[in-house]
Length: 255
Image (cartoon, rainbow, N blue to C red; front, side):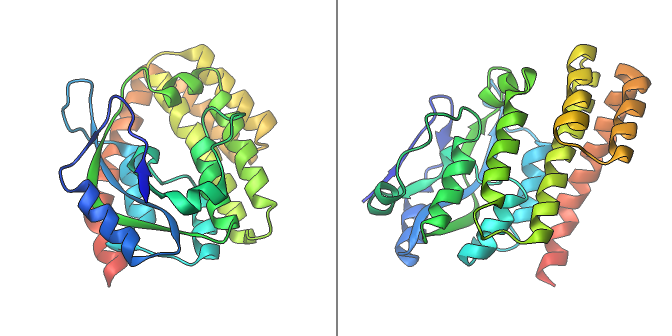
């Protein structure tokens, strides 16, 4: 009735299966269910992740997520916040949605979530951390960021989804800004590692492909001039900000 796709370097928490099946049984029109994750290192140590913490606070306002199809579609336009290997699939509906795209390498999951919704099925989620996701230097997202393939695919998937008739103008704008901010953040990461060539490629991508606002391009070029140590300071300050946001943002959402 259900199936999951486990990556070879990740792990389920002991109560994953019970909790996810209960969730899916409660929402019979849901094709997929997902949960929050704990990020672990190569050495099985739980570690703080800026990106994952941002996604969790920004997209998980309640313990259980069960948005309407249109609301979920427009939320996903702002970014793919669903951790792919945490997902459980309802076999009967997954067969109707079809297979993952064989043409995509980085965004095949994001593309699939949109197709679930376009097919008229729901997506539900749990805020519980029921899955351990390993981040390391050999992750596909890390490799594809180095040759900019990841960004090109993200832009292509976003553009395709925005043309499907469910998108709202405000969420299209927020989604495009989100793509720009991903490149901005990861450019600072590249500079903190003293990878000047990659940072220049990201500026070019932002300017010529994403056609980002001029102020963002100028900001990137200013960041490029501050050098490796300056970039490390910016990253550290941003991490501190996200940590405080993780603590205080949920309280605001529940008020």
